[in-house]
Amino acid sequence: MIVLPARNEGPRVGRVVAEVRRLLPGVPVVVVENGSIDDTAAAAARAGAVVLRSGPGYARALRAGFLYALDAGAPWVVQMDADEQHPAAALPALLRALDHADLVVGSRFVGAPGYRVPVHRRTAIGALAALASVCAGQRLFDVTSGLRAWRPEALAALTDDYPEDIADANLLVRAVRRGLRVHEVSVPMRARSGGRSMHAGPASVLFALRMMVLTAREGLGPRRLLLGGSPATARPAPLEFSHRSLP
Ligand SMILES: Nc1nc2c(ncn2[C@@H]2O[C@H](COP(=O)(O)OP(=O)(O)O)[C@@H](O)[C@H]2O)c(=O)[nH]1
Ligand SMILES: [Mg+2]
Image (cartoon, rainbow, N blue to C red):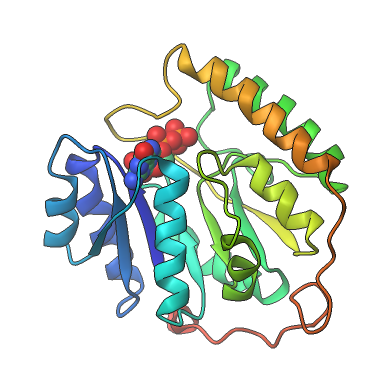
């Protein structure tokens, strides 16, 4: 299942939904909307998505989408932006990588570089990635990427106490510390095709600082290794996906 959090993405979300549905026919696409002042929900529905409304904010939207996917028994879940930043063509590689991981992050910073992330943003993400890597005990690169593929067991290990407001680097640290296998694969991303990033403007500085604090806090907690048939200890069977039929 594909989960797209979307706020004020009316001009873009329909194209994202259509692109994903074309590449992965039959895979349900769920758009989780809140707080939009445009026609995001209607555009998503027109393009064939299931539209959910959640409480305010990005993290709540994601959590609502994840709970919906778990409830529906989805064999895998991919979260991606509704702003055309993430190419649907990257999905098969992401899903293949799930054969050997519990959580796969589409990364701008491993492998060939895609578009050039603006320098101030790259610096902030670099600092955050360094902190997250220390806290996780594993080198992490694109800790704020919104393109992530999940095994449902991995999601289930995190949704009970899923963060209410911010779920980026802090969540990756938590995932690693809970024993989930987190991998990154190179994905050539684009800039958003229009509209405004939730991290634009002066608020982004506050966001970065808050993210640092939340990430450090995750690193202070005890390592809780999941035991007994958890994704951490079991070697899961390869996933069967409809994407296998794709070239
Ligand atoms: N439902 C919902 N979606 C949001 C919210 N904030 C951001 N998003 C969506 O989450 C995705 C990531 O946000 P974006 O602004 O692209 O962040 P960036 O990629 O880090 O610049 C986009 O699809 C946004 O429309 C929110 O408050 N509610
Ligand atoms: Mg984006």
